[in-house]
Image (cartoon, rainbow, N blue to C red; front, side, top):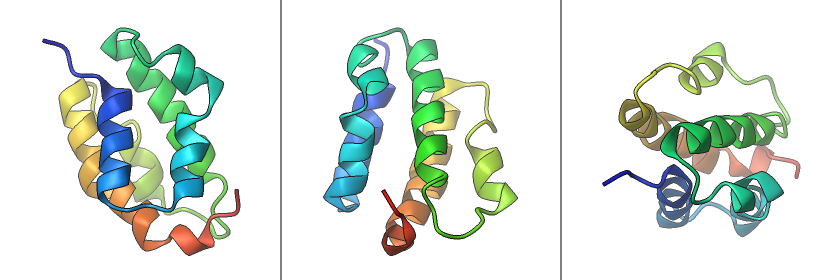
Length: 100
């Protein structure tokens, strides 16, 4: 069974209690909606794009480690793990510095 990356990331954001406007920025985007049930490799590309767009809404420069983590792994499951333990906690910790 293939994992749904869109669903996993949205649920993890909700679990971390990330601000609604940040979650909405991702889940209401037409790319997210159109590709929610796409193959995992397509979902990964879409989520990288959307998370990068979100990080560009940050009021301060994003560290290279955070930016690189978006593309660090070619394996989708390892990539998802990186997002859950690195990117999403960073977003939660700094959510007040996002200007959406």
